[in-house]
Every structure is written in C-alpha cells, then in structure tokens.
Length: 191
Image 1 (cartoon, rainbow, N blue to C red):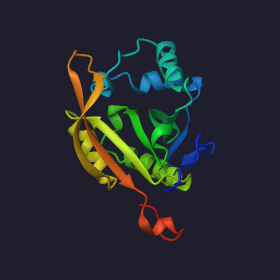
Image 2: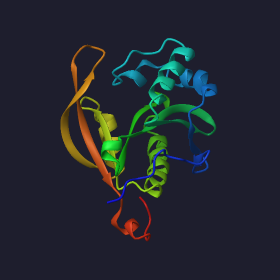
Image 3: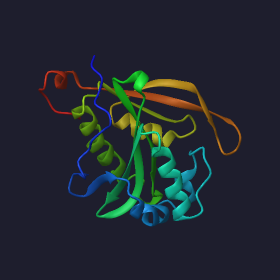
C-alpha cells in the first residue's frame, strides 16, 4: 500500500464532453446558489442552508481552509448544476473520501451524478489512491443507490459526529470503492 499524492492536483477541467468538474471558484457562487435553491438539495446536509451566494461561498471557502479538501463545481452542458468534494485524511492516506455532493434536483436521475463521479474516481485512482470512501445519511436512500451504482461496497451504517439540522444524531451509511486490481499493475480500465 502506498499513500496517494496530496494535495490532489486535478486538471483545470475533468470532462466527458457534456459533464464537467472544475475546482470551485468564488465566481461560481451565484450560479451555485441558484442551482441549489431547491430545499431538497439540502435535505441531508447537516449544516444551515445558506441564504445568499456570499454565505454559500463563505461556507465553501471555510471547508477549504485546512487544505484537506478540494471542492469541485459540477456542470452539465456548461451550466452549473452543483458541487462535490474530495476529502483527505493524512492519518488514512491510502485513499480519500468523496462527499459533500449537492446537485440541483432538476438533474436527479439524469445520469449527471454518475458521469461526474466516474470522471472524479478515475482521476483519484490516477493520483495513487488505493480506495475511495463514500458516506451518506442513513435516511438518504437515493444517494445510497447512486453510490452502489458506482460499484462501491456497502460497509453498513455507522455512528457519525454530525448532528442533523433537526437536532438528531446522524448515522451514516459508509461505502468503499477499491482500486480495480487490474489497475494496480497499470493494465485495465477504471470503471
């Protein structure tokens, strides 16, 4: 097992021609705020819902402050439709967590999330990760189903330190996607 390279240095854009991911930029905040205006985009997010693009930007920038997270803007057809992130833990440096994904409910079920995640998964494995972890609120069956479609193994429900906005203690369903064994020696396709 080797440690992956951090900080994650992604290209300026990961794209499949329609769906793209770019590192979050403050200039994305208004379009991001508008894309996430539907309260359903915040249903399983434990922190308060931002009330302005400035507040959203401050929240995203605050998450980036410790250098252990890369936030990405997700676009479809050039339009901002949401965000996702890669989180790194130096104490568990063989892999990363992909999370904090929030997408405009108008694009749920269209395949955009899966396409974005496949682009990101390939880039993370190219960066040396042995595994990628995903987590979702135990109540979020839609997200769990999307993670399973990526081929991630369900590790069950675990206690979480997060407190939901309704004041209840969150429990998270954890998943793990291992680097394909054929990729360990440089052969084979990812996903």
